[in-house]
Image 1 (cartoon, rainbow, N blue to C red):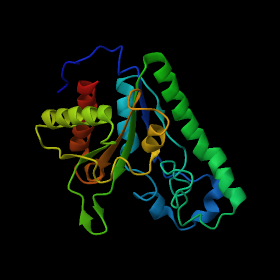
Image 2: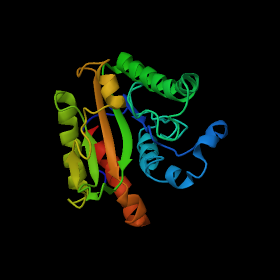
Image 3: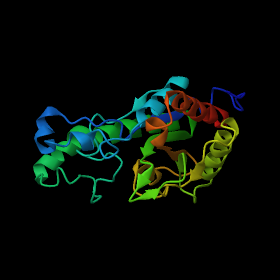
Image 4: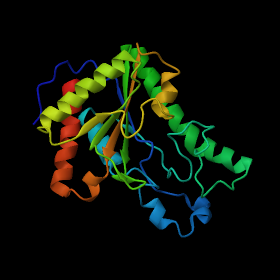
Length: 244
């Protein structure tokens, strides 16, 4: 399935940074009192992005990179929201006082952002440009509406490098999957919506930062079967290999 690489391993493969902001549904013991009876929510798409960490780890393994991922559920604090976003804290913890909220920011939110930012800056300093892939997944049905895509590539359409990168990645996925995987750009969310990549675009220009959110339909994890899921992940990794 894999195609010949179009560029040497000295370029994008080294300046690739992979993150997964909703990797887990874990709640630390000292915050568990706010989640009594919430096991179903924590193990669902509300608690974490099902399948996203698997893909992030596979991508990282291919290029011998690490995955930057928070250690707590988005229902405790959402690492893909800006700090002043009204939904950075879920309904489970909205009763927290200011001191408690600051504790969550200090222990779980800022450490993740700082680690990713430091790695991005390191790669920019070394190579002049960095590609940041933030891996996420989405529920197949939202508000009784079926999402008609298997993969979404989210980017800022006003940034030329991101636009070109995602067009090339989309074409590679379609080619390798023989058009059995439906790929859409800026779907089911807009690439310029509030998120970690949007946050970093404010820091770095298009010249040195490419930020893409990879969105995966959770139907592939839950209902397509193990073999199809494994093949799906292989296509995503090999297709990025073609672009890089």
